[in-house]
Length: 180
Image (cartoon, helix red, strand yellow):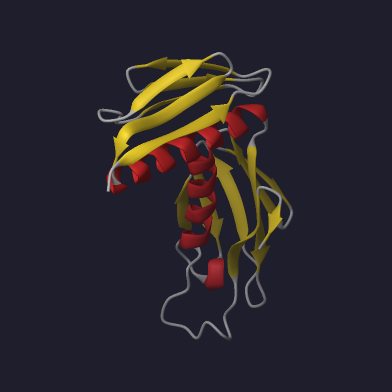
């Protein structure tokens, strides 16, 4: 069933947004983000202090596309206002391990007493700070911050051991102010 659907996104003060054929550029006090969307069947325009996304004869596909684009743009606006922050905790009970950062690679030494160091790739725009047993990942792009945190968790995944006994690892404890 086709019907007319439109969504509006308010542009807050201190944020500039430019639209060019599906490319959205958002500038704020924290930095600038750019992203290209497939808007072939969608009306995508900026009026006054709002972005209007919609279609006069929208189907389920256009509705899904509109909702995804709206969510991405809202995350971009939030990111350029305040950076996204993930907090991780280093947990160990058997073998104390350390995390060192050199460039965009984090090295995890002595994890579960292993002789070979584990490595974790940090995305380019993510800022990582280590304070004793806490790791803080910040970025203006929510996807980059989340991917950096997930890379730390995946690097310390335990295989071939009982997970109930060996609970060592790096775990996400807080996602952008929300406790896990």
